[in-house]
Length: 325
Image 1: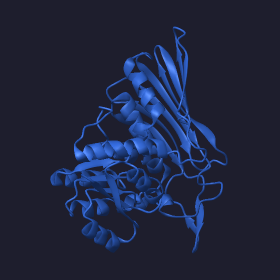
Image 2: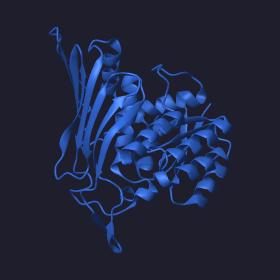
Image 3: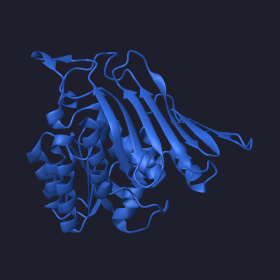
């Protein structure tokens, strides 16, 4: 049986998501539709009768696109992150999906990154001992050099901001690593570039492009510090450092995992090679898309830890709201 996939969104959806699904045996991408053209989306839903709708649209359109998909008898809906503009909207989408009885998933594809999975296995194996602290730094020039023009990404009312764009993946990864919910102790969102140009001139940015935060695990004893921006003048390799009572693990740029143990059992693990210039989402997205297909067709989950659903999207959205506040 062929799984028919409709992709909403021609940016990341057309560039990465659609080709990934098209390469999976038993999948057929029946269309890639612009996220801003609702009539074209409705026409595609009616004419192609997809089994799965993959929503890669801006967050302020997520709820409407989820509602459209649920109203056309699909078997599954995959929604990008950040999952809606806030937790209240995320909860509404979860309620609607549960009422419809469809498979509902959020695009937290970095759970399928090879080294992040090895890091999770390491944490679960207790080789590091109880996890005491985590430090995550991620500084890039993505919106500064060259200067990115004004758009929804810099408008808080439309779900913009670095906390949603990058923080959503970070919070999901941390929840998944620790198998615990997170509470925000303190958060300092910052807007380094206050104004950006568009076709009408300079526009005030109402969403943050940087943040510093301290969090803690709700049921455990782990503290977490995050320091991140995509408005730095240069790129710095991101580092996720997990510090346990028996050792540490340092993941650099999702390419190298350095393990140091108190008993001297040090280890360096490199990620599988990738083509130069390849989108950093590609490898995890390829693996994640196969999990999505398995979830929709009911063929099981090779990873065995359950793919992230709308419920995970809601849990992350609640933390993001606290980080923004």
